[in-house]
Image (cartoon, rainbow, N blue to C red; front, top):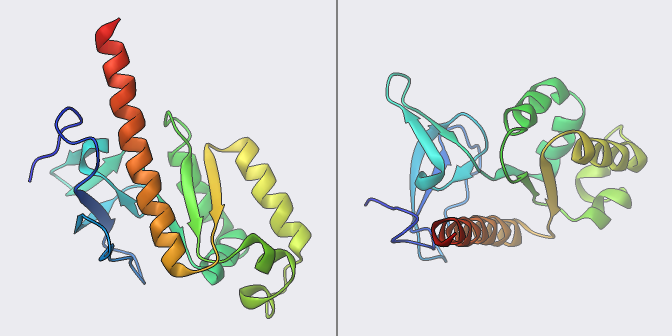
Length: 174
């Protein structure tokens, strides 16, 4: 299936990074998923990518990064430098890299759930999220459940597709 922004304003295919540990399937949504290697992010749409055939890697111009609560806290602590490199790859994008976290902000701030057994204070989480939002081209989205996180990611991809289409239409009419 070939998608172009002119013919398909709403994505019909979502590319999912092959390294995803607990991938979303998007079974409740009118899309198919394809497993590929993404240079940045975990989910994107083919029209946002260039494909390097030599390495068989897709390089998105917009993607969604998925984090479970535990993964998110690991990205802030033990894997901080690796995650910062991921964020750095999206600095030049026209829109922020959405990081969709499968836990609520309240859970993190109240030291519940994934926070209960971690040696990290909620103020550290708040400070890091605030600093990274200011320094990198990133937007954090905290959801109550995994299912809501999947819906959030789908809606972010749809919204981005629609905004791009509006942008393209306004450029062509000028």
